[in-house]
Image (cartoon, rainbow, N blue to C red; front, side, top):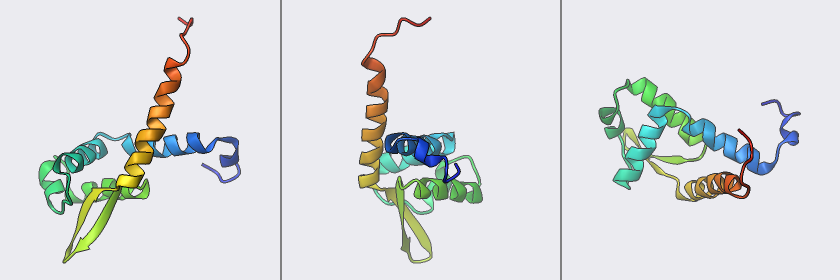
Length: 110
């Protein structure tokens, strides 16, 4: 999104779209579900759990990190990943507010 156009959207809209983009691939959803299930930092196990190559997993981890949803810590020669709790809470709040708006009005459309 061009810098000049971003001012036309609310902070909430930008935040929700950032999270939705990060959540928009099944592999990223699988990675997040794995991290949420394990509730601890995971290194090489992510690749073992998914039906995709290590390089593809790395690309999806990068997207999740850029969105702030996960953190990575160097542990020897590998990187351990876990949920970034403060950002996860922002995601939960932002999406909750987004979906709540649907229930504020009853639709008379179609």
